[in-house]
Image 1 (spheres, helix red, strand yellow):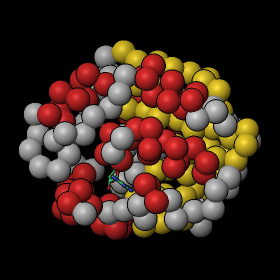
Image 2 (cartoon, helix red, strand yellow; image 1 turned 120 degrees about the horizontal axis):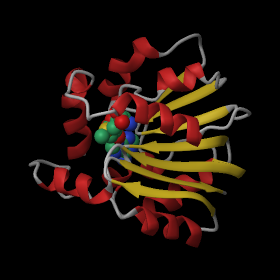
Image 3 (spheres, helix red, strand yellow; image 1 turned 45 degrees about the horizontal axis):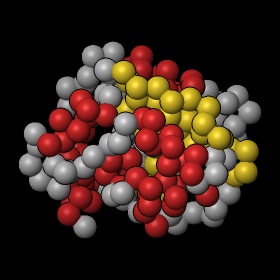
Image 4 (cartoon, helix red, strand yellow; image 1 turned 135 degrees about the vertical axis):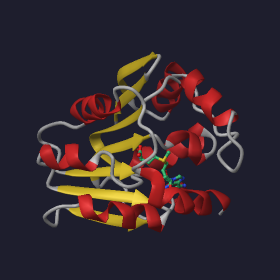
Amino acid sequence: MLKRGYFNELAPRWDSLPALPGAEEKVARFVRRAVETEDRRVLDVGAGTGILLPHLLAASVPCIVELDFAERMLEAGRAKAGGGRVEPVCGDACRLPLRPGSFDAVLCFGVLPHLGPAGDALAGLLPAARAGGTLAVGHLLGSSELNAFHSAMSGPVAGDCLRPARETAAILQSLGAAVLACEEEPGWYFVRVRR
Ligand SMILES: C[S@@+](CC[C@H](N)C(=O)[O-])C[C@H]1O[C@@H](n2cnc3c(N)ncnc32)[C@H](O)[C@@H]1O
């Protein structure tokens, strides 16, 4: 579990790392586009310290499951969790410790490249959404920007790779989902499907 150790070690510093330009507005846009007003249960995969949480809470989502395999990430984010609506779950997104079909929306923000082959990861994550529920993948960089960033790093995330949005959308389509959005440009990556 090299990656888990890597993210645990990063956790205390995660929120003070320099933010990408426009990050706050783009995170808000991701949540606005990925979550519907009637969504009651939302899964935040690879939640980290809860970058999405303030926006999910502001959107009045009644139940938010924050899933991460790095317990120190979840601990560092605990202060952002409000009012009993947030359930932190320490577990592996590649072996989801959650009941299938139990979420209205599954959010994968800044995590997919870290989960191994995208087809395997998405085949495991899509069933977490109920029939008619949604899954969204988002990043603050386009795939080539993010891949260049990762390959310039050393350590266990150096080879992690995000496929272009159209390929991610095609994988999800091949898994039986309907594509609602497929957008990629410098500084933005957004794929959303309905199961
Ligand atoms: C790049 S960080 C992004 C965190 C957060 N979503 C954000 O944007 O600030 C990736 C997160 O995914 C988590 N992660 C990576 N692989 C995972 C896995 N197999 N299962 C669960 N969490 C994982 C890491 O621990 C880390 O918190």
